[in-house]
Image 1 (cartoon, rainbow, N blue to C red):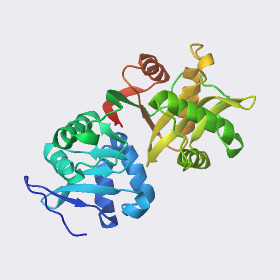
Image 2: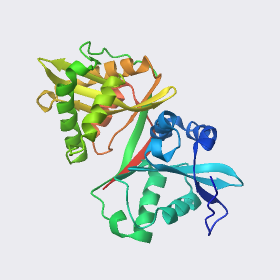
Image 3: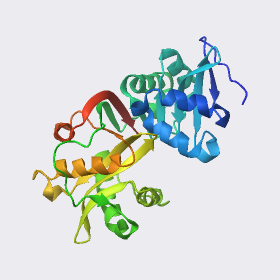
Length: 286
């Protein structure tokens, strides 16, 4: 694909293609825990915008890829310094298509601030800002006992799991994921069919759930952790998460997640399970 030079710096910006796959994956796997979301998407769909559903921008110096930006519904800067961020800000322009900006805290917040200052409008109208989200990981099963009721969810459990997933999403994000296209239902179905959904099912109800949101190589990222509200405060979450980690590690030896810093109960929960902090994420929600 032809290069697109950007004025105002020594680097250049271009839209990446499948010809760049090896270089892109090398860059992403240089920091696999930070980049597992983008690495998972690129590994599964490549860099063809039609198959991936969005473009991936690459920033180069001396013909070497040093940064990239996943420019889809989730806008994710990777290994981006100030010059790369400025190039992305100029390219993205005033019209916001992203539903969120997410990733490593410093470049994520700088990208949002730069877009807001330069273009204003939709980029400035934020629904929720989460500037500090501890990124945590563990690569052992942990010493605490698990909950034997936790298992992989199957399509036989779909309705109950979908109901729990909607409750989790609404509680966590603040809006319902349900819309006319049915994309969230399809997302949940895909997660179950891929063997990435875990939970406790009792009397036809899912009372605990968690799933693997993305994975690449040895690394996965857990998301969507939810316990039925009436059961909270009874010490059930720790053994349930211990079992989730063990099930994940059957396929992905290194398990990660990120959590809002103000959710001190969740942070303490994950620390008890055996997770330790390895970085900081941030999320801007529109």
